[in-house]
Image (tube, rainbow, N blue to C red; front, side, top):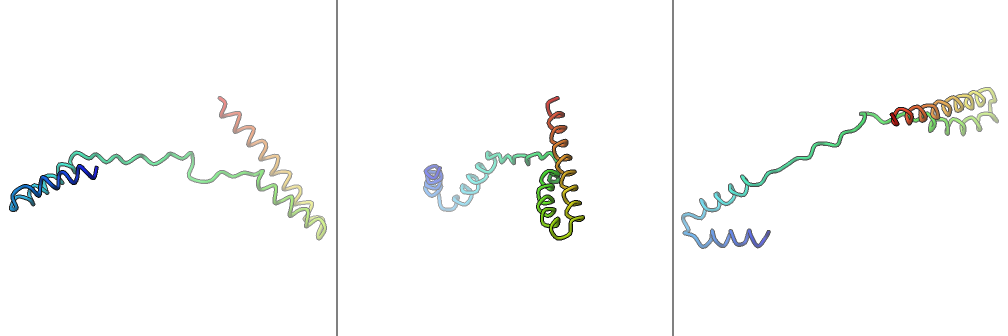
Length: 103
């Protein structure tokens, strides 16, 4: 590629001094006209926001519940219950999502 550019420059420099600007512009325009720039389309995403994973929310709720059971048992048990609901929700959401994608 560099050799081709060097060859074009040598041919222009070999021409008459008063016509070099015109030759240079012609060479630049010829290359500019022949090069086609194709911009790839942006990748398509399924949705604009991140998916919510209730099973992943259940894990920290279990940890918080384990600490709070020792400090204040009713709140700790409530956290365990919320973790159980999140875990069931996450498992059901995963099963239904996989079931719909097979069809």
